[in-house]
Image (cartoon, rainbow, N blue to C red; front, side, top):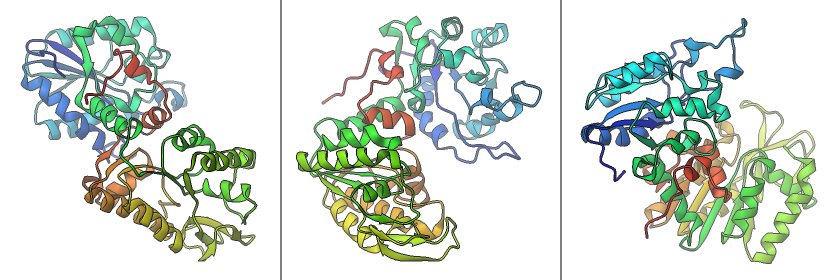
Length: 406
């Protein structure tokens, strides 16, 4: 953000893909909007005019019965009231993304004014990375700022293709995207040790590349959530009716063997909270994770696992957390995730760097009021996951890459 925005028209890609109440269409979680405010405010205060673009939901996949887009449900007009409250300035809204009206409204913008364009995904060219659509978007600004980390892993027109119409002196990252990359680099480039990664969630297949890469980097890899039972069964354990990917058993064993060869401490939950049904009011008890009876399923880490995981986390100097330890949505099976969240916060207070890498882990620290007690909470689940897997994000590459300042 070291460009001069004074007197310039600045096209800013933000990530306003936020949840809306189905009845009122009001924003129910404004986290992503608030995280974009520093970039928007900075440009306005420097005397620039801002043209905002974003997507919202998947309108092309949820067409109305007559085959048309449900513009009421997916319109960015629904974001205007909350954005107005947060920014404290008038928001001009254009009900098209590109076209004569969009061009006219953008052209009339004065210093310190802001225009929000309609949902980029109302145009089929967005997800295709269409050059004509991107060129039309590019015509709306003198400078292009990409601040949408949550979509940086998508080679879409408004995140990637559009950047080719601006030279290096007329495009840059916004504060949010730069911070995401900077903080991710703290766990991918020479992290302080011990480095502990905590990976949860339902399936090994969803995080296969992440697990494989982390074994090359960490001192301890903690595996929780539903994916832990695939590892348990791979080692000959009895897991009852717990979630298991049968086609990933060999992979699980390969990861276990790789960890041994690398000297990485791969920790699986020694005990589990098991239930007789996938329901919050099910009967539940504690059982060894490798000795779960038929008819019972593991839905959270047990008390011994909680204590062991917390002890390891509190000794860490670098922590990455991606994914819950159990069925966090159900209060009966949320304790493991809550305890891990508190342990991460405690370790951070003691001087560790902690990165919460998207998804339900973010929901956990937010719900527990611990977001300000960890080092960094990412706004991008899929983008952060791909970044940690070692992939180059199209939205970053299109801007000329990112160099971390030492």
